Amino acid sequence: MPAVSSTPDDPRHDPAHPAVRRMSSRYPVEVIRSERRNKTVSARIVDGVIRVRIPAWMTAEDEARFVDDVVGRIERERRSSAIDLLRRAESLADDYGLPHPTSVTWSKVQRQRWGSCSVGSGDIRISDRLVDVPPWVLDSVLIHELAHLVVPNHGPDFESLVSRYPLNERATGYLMAVSDRLNQQSS
Ligand SMILES: [Zn+2]
Image: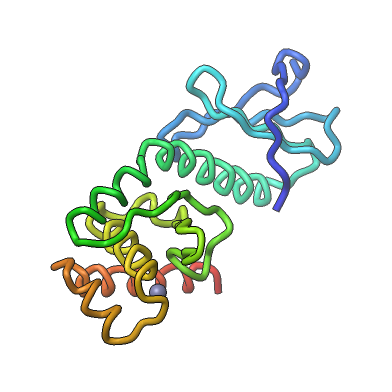
């Protein structure tokens, strides 16, 4: 996957390569092909527009894949920053008699698991794939990780903690369906 930089850039440097706008995103997207840039690609939000710069040699197919990927990533970042995970986890901890975490952060690298926690430090990480699931599903993952701060394994004690959340089973089913869909996409 190409690295995304946020270096300032000026489209006027490439008058021969006018921007193309796509409407597949919630943000307008501008794609600028640059001959000066042999290998670098970059993407950033400028005045409410996602501006993606790609090298001129990139094929249309590669361009489409890269732009989809980078736009998806930027949009997830935007949406995830709107959710205050720590406050939400603290409020759930109060509701279901679980300990407060030290920190709760989004993780971009976590793809196999929805969440993880360090029992020692009380730090919880949540996969940013969950940015778009319904709030009650995200809550179930937070409760799952909070319960691990008390019981590290998935035994009966753990089950009795997470089942305090009435939508626990429904959320588990929902997440299994999402996993299946993601697996199909990547295979
Ligand atoms: Zn677990």
